[in-house]
Amino acid sequence: MSVFARLVEQLADLLQPLFLTSATAAAIVLFTAFVRLAVHPLSRAAARGQKANARLAPQVAALRRKHRDNPERQKQALMELYAKEKASPLSGCLPSLLQVPAFFLLYHLFSSGSIGGEPNALLSHRLLAAPLGDRWTDALASGGVLGDAGLVYLGLFAVVTAVAVFNYRRTRRQLAAAPAPAPGDVLPGMGAMTKVMPLLSFATLITVAVVPLAAALYVVTSTTWAAVERVFLYRDMPVAGAMASPL
Image (tube, rainbow, N blue to C red; front, side, top):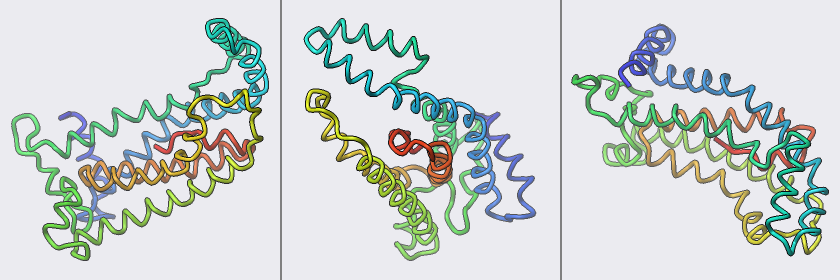
């Protein structure tokens, strides 16, 4: 983690003339952009995979109907179909999974009181008036919702809410545009998932509220990037884009 801390400090030093006391916060945003750029080829591959899955949906439904009384044969037939078409039902998961280590690095870096046996100086760095090592509860305790630090969080909540509303409306439109499945093709729990899925973007608000501000910046930046990225990657695929992960 000390190597990662030095990387953040070096980025902050480069950005300090432009962002002054918020240089470390700007470094975290830039680091997040680097992570998203690194996994972008995988996101493009995931988009191609989900488009292939959408194209295979009628065949998948037919196989489920054909082998509904033989789960093992159904599973084998689906695996053969995906292998033949070089597709995967989990094609959209890998880009999100690869970002998890970066998020936890930031989380632990700004949750640790010491680095290499020395006090963690990064905890005192700020985004405007809010220390990067603090959480929303700290901002509420030090000045309330409209205090200097509280206003920083209100700004982040506003960005997250705007992105969540955009994702919510887009997902609702995509689900409404999807052709209605035949009664025998509806999987158990699919109805509940369809109702809950548009609301998942709002869960980011909880994450931003409970993690250190540095990790919250990562989440806000990554979520915003993902929303814009999906618009372009899935612009010719109105349904499958809704299934992509928001992180």
